[in-house]
Image (cartoon, rainbow, N blue to C red):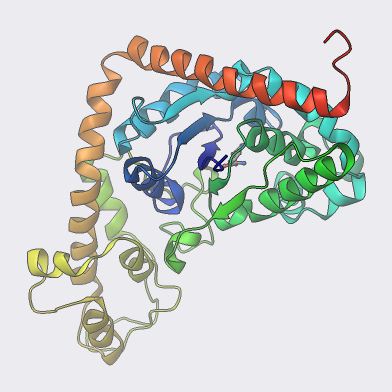
Length: 350
Ligand code: TRP
């Protein structure tokens, strides 16, 4: 039997999605969905994972389910081609997690770089880390393996999660026989898209830092945010030579700009390299580059914003998409859980 090609990925519903999510994974998912190369595309709203560090804030997670679903639909994820579903509606994921827990040591979890950074970010003292939070890489391995995913399109920050999942798959298959499928990470192909910096030049776009451009951003606030973007603080006069490194405007251009944008908005250049050369030589002002970036972002985001508004008119229909998707996803996960229990020989009544 030919191995099916299956995509599984998802996001935590802790806020609206921003253009970092978009260039890091969302845009790619739509292309993959439409490529016809995959047998299944599953997109999960990871509410249970969001609760691992929002235990005291279930309202936030609940309210953001619809926001994330609207962002998905607005970007072009199509329920006729992809299965959009909610993690907590698939109880089989908990059961798989429980069995995988026996295959992972505390030391291994402590070494997971993503967990390490997040523990620091949240300021947990060692002994007070919530167990659910600490073990979420195991539950993420359940998310991936439950659907026998072969391909996981995510940002680079998720690489340690996929590595840990692969280890769990190998351990399981070694202990109980070939059952689970090893997934492969699919990273953005462009360096700028790997970790899109915030508008303030800080390492990462994040809601808590207030440096995001949301997919639902209105045109006027989009332009305002582009205008106040961090560039090169030593580039004061137009004639000064400018630096590209750490210059957010150019990083965003790397992520969004195509040659065709020059013909449309800035015909005195043929491509991004020519614009960069002029900037570093001196004689090119930040405002001109920002205006160009604003036009490119508006061109990309305007149709997303409009589609989002259309879908937002009928929230019941959006929940219905998620409900149907969750039923379909659950069938797949239940089948895998059966395979897992057979392999583990805990199928006593069969
Ligand atoms: N950890 C991911 C994030 O924070 C969300 C997620 C949960 C996920 N389960 C997943 C991503 C499985 C890919 C595959 O964005």
